[in-house]
Image (cartoon, rainbow, N blue to C red; front, side, top):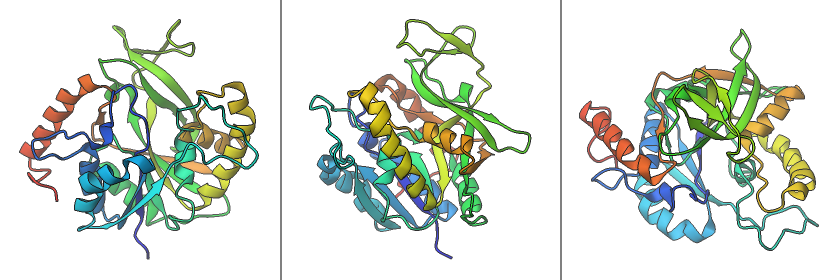
Amino acid sequence: MKKPTLVILAAGMGSRYGGLKQIDPIDDEGHKIIDFSIYDALKAGFGKVVFIIKKENETDFRSLVGDPISKHMEVEYVFQDIKDVPEGFEMDPERVKPWGTTHALQCCKGAVNEPFAVINADDYYGRSAYTTLYNYLTSHEDGEVPAYAMVGYELKNTLTDKGSVARGICITNEDGFLEDIVERTKIIKTETGAAFSEDDGATYTDVSVDSLVSMNMWAFYPSIFELFDSALGRFFKEDVAKNPLKAECLIPTEVDKLLKAKQATVEVLSSQDKWFGVTYQEDKPFVKASIAALKEEGLYPKKLW
């Protein structure tokens, strides 16, 4: 049986962070968060890593991330290009924002033909999450109704004091399958817990900090590419027409539509590890301290590669 592949979403702009956070070191040895993710995936049994990046970042990304890892596992690159749009679609010349994570994932069509996991480049998910995904992908098969999975985290473990975050709020049934997922693009920590805004911060609605959220950690099969092809066709025809400069096609939103149409199921797997990430520059000291503590505990060697 072919080992699962790890697909990493690393083409984002990093606008809130103020730089290319995917290759920003977070320890004295020069490791990035992405290094720890790949190290954990390798330990869990994943056989290949595919980076989704922008072509203009390829040289830096190869030298700082891909080349050291390539000595330990197979590495491949695919490129997200804002100009990669359906035939006949006319893009607004002022558009600079990428088309979103669904569009990014579709760059892997043809390059990934085996079961795979998807993660963000700038999130630390914890060792056990990769073992959980590996076990799922090696014990299930793509069926007539595709059976996908995601790793869920409690909202309170994924907030930052430094500003707003985007999270997919999840509702599961009694059997642990995803029933509903709503992407909230502006969630903040409050004195009483958390709240989200749908009007760019003009008003806020409280949300439980115990809510289960998606951190874009998915288990998929190649069947997802055909399903997302249809989603992107609709997105460019409908959503971009309404918001040509900022509309995004996001994985949680499109997965929710698949669930509603009964075109797929998603089992929600839980992780006991604490998530952390660098949404903002101000998050970096906490992340550095957290990684240092994990090294001190012996979970990671001083040098990963």
